[in-house]
Length: 283
Image (cartoon, rainbow, N blue to C red; front, top):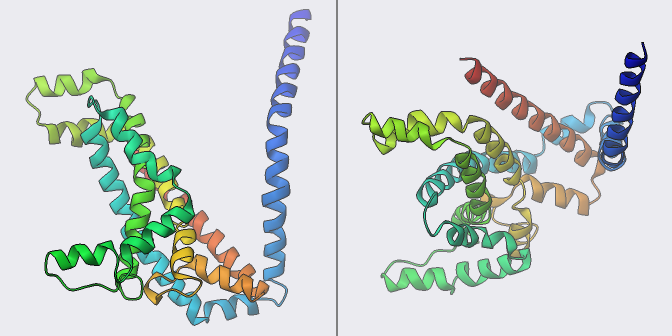
């Protein structure tokens, strides 16, 4: 009986210490995230479903959703593919630490400097068009034409490649070398080792990288805003521009309904990806 009481006291002490540990974080999330979002949900239904109807019928909302989906649909697969290829290339290289530092350099560059680099390189008389003229190619209107979308893609890849490469390398470091060595002894090619040995071991890391890259794809607004302003070319007008302009015009009702729709979209995407990974693991 004394042993049970001693065990119970010990368990209560551990539970109390855990509560004290996560209580500040929980209080911060509740105060600065859950409660404000709850207020947004309430505000979005102030006029019933009229706010949602107005938002869904808004042409700017249609353009922003279309461009954002296009941006994520192109930028995310490119980022995953290029970063994985780069991680394979530099993994276990004697220059790995140097190359990782080079790839991570864009994360240390302030946003204002990135915007300045954009203006210098992609201006009509900038470095980009000077390179094209050197090869006797026509100048491109990078920021005021359809090429603006691809400038946004380049910025997203440049900004997030290093971080994603480090995550891939961290996942590869957890794979036992004996697996790939045994496969090579049996006559497997490098591609076969990657396809059947390395990629299956990286599924949990792949899920984490996909989710982080998906969320980071919605964080390119600062650079685009500093370079092209609140109303850029229509090919790079994203949801962040829409929210910024609605906030400036104090269209709080439309902002609230759009924020709820976006939160539902994020939740559905997260659940869908999680279900897909769970099915693959079971299979």
